[in-house]
Image (cartoon, rainbow, N blue to C red; front, side, top):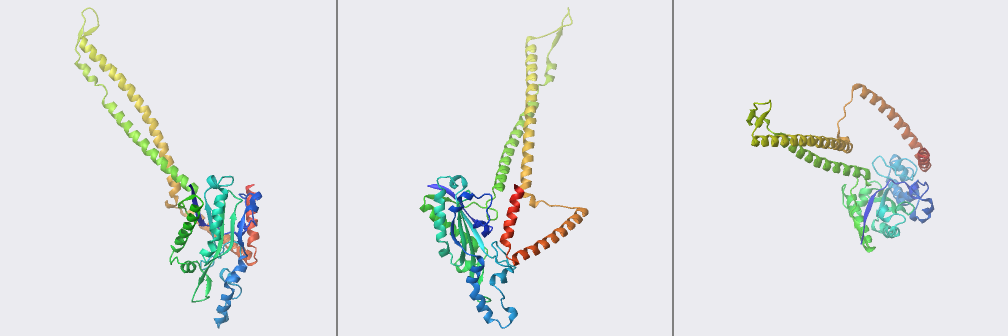
Amino acid sequence: MKSKRISFGQGKGSITHNNRTFIANNVDRNRIADNITFIAKPIGEVYNELFGDAVERYNARQKRNDRKIHGTYYEHLFHCKPSNSVITSSDKRKSFYEDVVQIGRMEDSGYGTEDFQLVADCLKEYMNSFQARNPNFHVFNAVLHMDEATPHLHIDYIPIGHYKRGMDIQNGIAQALKEMGYGDGKQAIARWREKEVEVLNEICHRHGIEPLPPEKARGTLEVAEYKEQRRKSEQLAVENRKSQSELDALNGELKSAAEKKVKIVEIDNIKAKKSRFSKKISISEEDFQNLTDLAKKQTASVKNTKKLKSENAELSQKVTDLEVQVKFLAAELDKYKQPVTFSREQLKKSAEKISELEQLKSKYRRAIEFINSHALATEFEIYKDNRKNNVLE
């Protein structure tokens, strides 16, 4: 049975990208026709279908005009025309949610591999039962992309909850999850995702695939660079510990060699006799042998000490280099924990910069409000992407 990693995470939520109104650089235009669209309905129409009657029922109960909902429910929540990108309301509701589902990776399931179509069939089977399995998640857009590196699903849905106060039907992720049996609290969405992964696992098994557990990720996607950097840091730490151990052992040998230096003082014990006929002196054969042995030992000791010092220097430099690399990577991984201090002059400059940024943000918000109020979100997104591509080129 083939083993493959399952990816199940929250997507950015861009209908223009999903439906190829905008075509990114990683898309193979020759394979766009291979994409499978399960459903594609304008979000404004879907909101009216889902909540239009609830708005009328709510307004009929209101005696004061200022408490009524004027306009559509979408405009009431998000204060703009329907957008093909996710909009967040003041009370943190999102206009829609998106999940991206993938089986396998480019290396084992990508375009041109033997299992490319196999994983696509699994994803189709999963999508065909998604709506029935999740009645409170109304799917209005769902596409299986076959024109990128690896087949994957984009599922866009609006959560529906039923309430006793206010409108009897509203956009509400927490209530939708509760009604589908996943309970209350922040873990409800995690319990739902876990159940969906179980469904994917069952489908994979039926198709001869052994699903590997989803890897933990920061946010909703795997962060390959972070994981690779962490792996390198851990590897360097291991090498550093090993080199430090070798250095300690070498220092021990060096110390031992120093302690074993020949005690020249022993030479004083050798008895020498002066010759009557010359300035030469004579010693006994035994003393001569002892002196020769001592000289040889001294020479060997000096050579060994020089060798050990050379090896010590090289290994010390290696340890130093490793420590520098470890410290650099550790700083990269934990830099957000490091305290930062500023001078008064720096703080003043920062305050001025923040003020400028706030003015720019204010202008940007007004521009976004104008874009949304005139239903120009899609055109603006295409403009940004095209401009980005032109800069890159």
